[in-house]
Image (cartoon, rainbow, N blue to C red):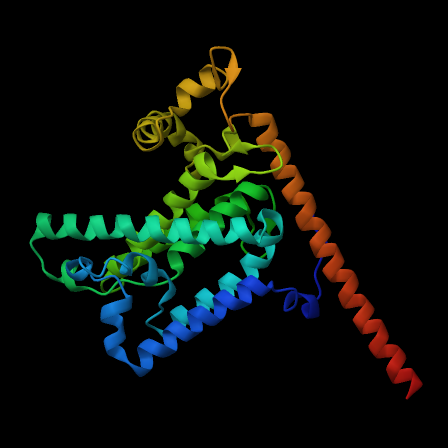
Length: 306
């Protein structure tokens, strides 16, 4: 599905109020830890101190310790947020951020503790972990769900491959960067937790359904075609462990139980939601383009009047 071109003027407009507010939180958190470095102890996730500082599981995602991290997170939030929030709605968008952020750092905490007991290296216990990149990777999963076949002109890949491409690039870079444990687990769990949320948990008020059980959003679609026969059984086991639902058995039964559809398990409705999301995105881009054209026309008229 093609989308209209956006002028340079409209590209930097249309940011939602919620995204602007969250951007202020990210920038503010970065400024706080720069002015008061000791604040990292109370805001970032330090596994050895998470008990009793349990609020770190929530606050860590909104604290950027580096300048480039704050810049990338703020830009990513503003630009991706203005695509996703109008489709999901402000309340669902905020809920997605909160749930994915919390679950991501919960599993990062568990991973750090596990790595300590496996390697007995104390740096896993006292390494301050924080950043919004877990949620940003989750945003890419949201884009994969809504507009999977949209092609990115610069990278020449479809948006459905964005999460996989980002993770692959991060894993490759981890071999050449110091302390990859500071960002790699957050990216991995951010991607997986966001898929879990969108696949099984996200509520759809307009249809009273939950999740997106369509084949196009299965976990195996994050991998190349030749790996999917291997990934599907593994994903089914983890899906059953985490959510009490087996993807393979559900698909085989047509997502039914006793002849009745399971809540939120209509793949046709999931496909319709993606179509509605793509249309909403197209309409938003078109309206921004028209607004930009109107502004340029008014500027020309003003110049002619002068």
